[in-house]
Length: 105
Image (cartoon, rainbow, N blue to C red):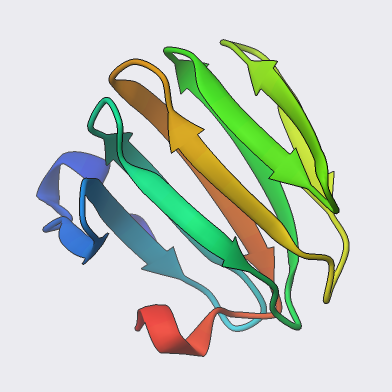
């Protein structure tokens, strides 16, 4: 299978989070363009997640500990661990989820 990311239509999953979503049998990839000030409320899910900051500055809270991340930083989120985030600038992020994030389909 071959996918051109430029041809994937973005979805606004939550206010300010515009994602191009790609799903495989066992993973979901989300390429986010995030508006400055947009927030993800604290939540958890059964999926293991890796979040990578591609551009911008993103404040991420994992299990109650907050830190600011920039380009090239990755955060590994184990299943069921509470986390939240806020874009301090316009950001580009990439999330990888395993297994597939069914609610994003």
